[in-house]
Length: 69
Image 1 (tube, helix red, strand yellow):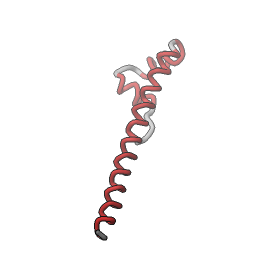
Image 2 (tube, helix red, strand yellow):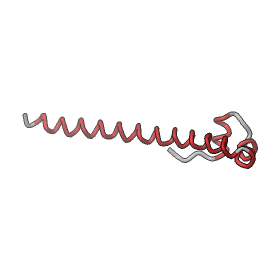
Image 3 (cartoon, one colour):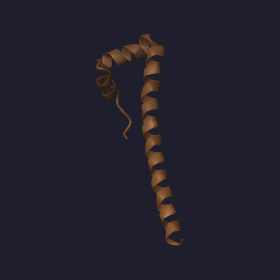
């Protein structure tokens, strides 16, 4: 998953990019919360993928073990 640009973030929030920049300048706490939300979503997706990979790996190892039973 590629990191989102400010333009992508603004589009997702249904605001102008200038609004996002104004939040950063005039409402830093709001901007911080919004950026944390985007980072949370990014990390959640990354961890979901890691979890799925681990499940696959676990199944492959279990299948190999089962061959010798």
